[in-house]
Image (cartoon, rainbow over all chains, first blue to last red; front, side, top):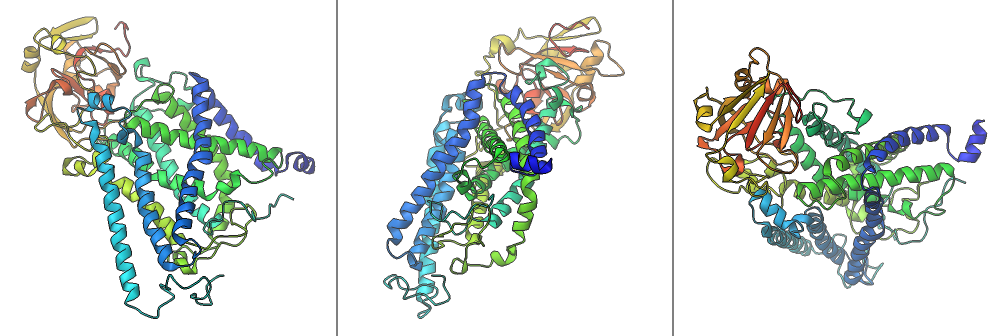
Length: 178
Length: 428
């Protein structure tokens, strides 16, 4: 019996028990969630997953890949260029994260309602976000400059910062993964 | 046959992906999501939805409301704390959730898409997990920023959506926790936090296909990746949390909806339903305003001056909104709700009360308060705040203020209190 289930189902019996139990709870709540405009809610539920997986992830992963390619080109192991990628990637990540989370306020999507409800001006958020972004990139740039300067002061430490002109495979210590 | 070979090609080549990283992020969510769920359920209970249809935006909740209890008035800051945590933690978990989803994205495109009936059911469950999770985070983020583009009322969407998400989370934890605990022991977290990029190696090949077969050169360490996620959470905390602290720190919440106060002076604290938006004017609240107090078959009508001649009491209480922002304690002065109950014969035991506003339309223009809220000596029909008369936007001439109640339960521009009743037209 167990083997038959395994053959037909492809997973252990516990797997089936867990999922069916979960579907009971999900179904009970889903029936209520979909009691109103069920089609629109379903679009939001499934659409959220699809937009994230098929649009957002390829978009940011692709942008990161492209930027990395442009900066590092044919010298993917140049530590100086990798550092540059990092010092753009991190502030860009934080900035875009803030933009994503606070998009309704920054875009003033509900600006009139916001003003009517809170008596506050809705048009300050874009400027603030730009300012935060500028600060993030400035700090990151200063840290990069400091890093480069400190590495240059230690000549011969190619391990820390090999010359960007050294071709792939010649400037790296042997213990690095090739 | 069930073990897939690691994806040898394909676009997912990050050397950081692997069961260990996914498990570390999963553990953060395993702590964070229950915190969000519990604080969310507390917020739901804080409305006393089982007391009256006017408090209840989810009348078909059925078994999902079984846990409900009378919302206490002690400690008076509890809702401020739990709802501040719910919203602030929820915002801080966004980068963790996104990183977790990034770490498992190769599985979405794994081939064959459906290996067996069991695999198909699990993928359906994962759709509920990812869709439900993103739905909860999205509706929450939109609601706290007053952008009501979601399809329906926020309360049922976010409440029922939370249970769908929870059902999928429970299955995911039951099926994946053992493997996650094994994966987390494959690398030493402390050693990993000391490993720089140059010494970062891919995790050993795994059955799930997370570790790429042909990994790219690392451009950052796992320490760096986790640090970047943590930095994202910290940044979100810094631009948000101040709105739940108030005082001078409010201004630090640069991107939060209530990072500013609309004015100065006693009535300068934040507001979220203005008189203009509620279409309440001087016509309804001026010299012609009367407070009607009903109960026990009696009806008493009071002018504002008559209210002022009743014994006045003070209490220091915050305003704490379901949207997570709050104010520090404000000093309210007015008439105790239980003294008003005594006016219509409820002397010993304060009953429930049905509170109605002059606000002509909209949610929460009427609410029901439970006996424990009415009986608390700090519960007032407030006429003054911070030593000044209430401003129109804060509920002039009279508003309810109850310890530990969500902001919307503290009805503004009160016109009628019906003691011993919890619904429109109910006879006492």
